[in-house]
Image (tube, rainbow over all chains, first blue to last red; front, side, top):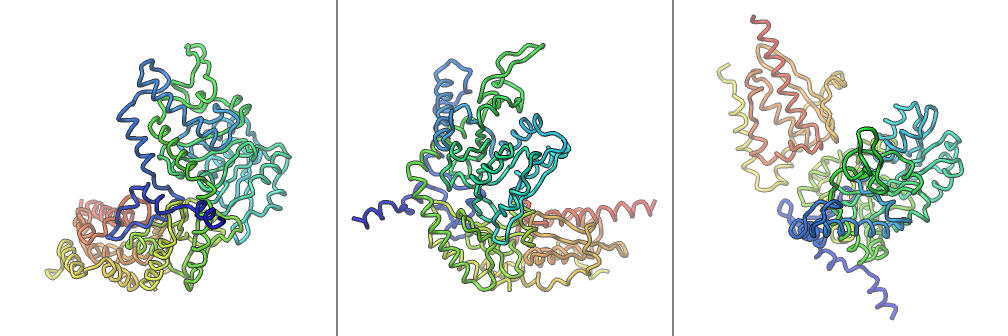
Length: 414
Length: 148
């Protein structure tokens, strides 16, 4: 009985793989081994179908038309909002704002809430392991307002030094903007603790969920974050659509981001009044097709089950950590206790780019470079890493391929 | 100077050399070998002014103009890029500015290394080709002033 229950709870990776048509392709005459999922994940057939169906059957602009196509498109477009609300457990559907992606979500908060609330002398806290998109928007804001950007240091495992973080907090701290899971190292940050500590000094917290939303259960209410941002394309959905969640009172008080159609209630040349949430932040014709297809991705993930996916990915990460660890000269960068399925490494004095080119030559797609996290790379005193990141469709055989490919690359380069 | 090979003659030689390789591994082994053999650039040239910045690998490039011809020296921190640099130097170094500016550099495509010039921000090679041509252009302009 126990055995059959275990099997039932195990992800059937081979049937999952069949849902992703791209995994059948070859690269340089070898079967594709796609290990660049932290950059973007591949798309299951249901997502591709949702895109095709929209353009084939009911392409129309949303919200304004009274004809059947417009109504069908609007319904599908808005159903995604409900699906996202459930996926992250937001209090209400109007707190789910469509953006182009994580970066735009962060910029939206910076340009609206930030401009309205940050003053000279205020402080914004980020961490050493942030993606550039959670550094630069705040730098721009700080420069404009005369505010100060402060940085949480890390230990050599790639974990935040929480005592140092608490020392940084003070009444001048207005915002803590922190990545949930690091794209470069995989580190999962203790966001609940960070949020609670920040709230005690009256600071708001934005969580960058670009890497975490695909791996972890997200409950924005339990987390008690003030803003949460993520992208569809890293969780099996299309590119060009992302989500900003915000607490309702904050979103209500924020000025609009962009002006245009859709975001207004009434326009006269004397005064324009703005639409209600979420439309206040959604000026212009939105990315309808990709938004609709995001729901297909969420349904797909829900149907398989995040718990099941996570266990599979944890198994892959553990296996890869052991297998890669046996390669002489290989050093894993980022050994946090809590990690998502991302493994970054360097090999002796070899340049990551050389390794990446030779792996590609065997059909193995990894990411090399600084992963848009230069301050993090600087901490480890390396120009970059090779990064393999795993998704629900990856297998242990693919990790064996990676190890083989690496051994050959090292031999060629040494 | 009649024994001087033209750009297209050297490109032809490289394409012919590569036609002997049956596999990508062999091609890369050869490029890596070229990279390892590329003479290191004197430390004094490794300054920001000479730096051609790519997202992942860094290239330093210097050019010298003697007797109407441009001579290049370069280095990178990545060995495959170094190998590609070595080939570019073989083709362009010692050529006339005009020929450098107009060189189509088709050999890169013909030996299957075009991906390294793609706009992926992944290396400084595309920027390096541009910079090599810029030097050619600069020396050409300088010449035209001198000759006025």
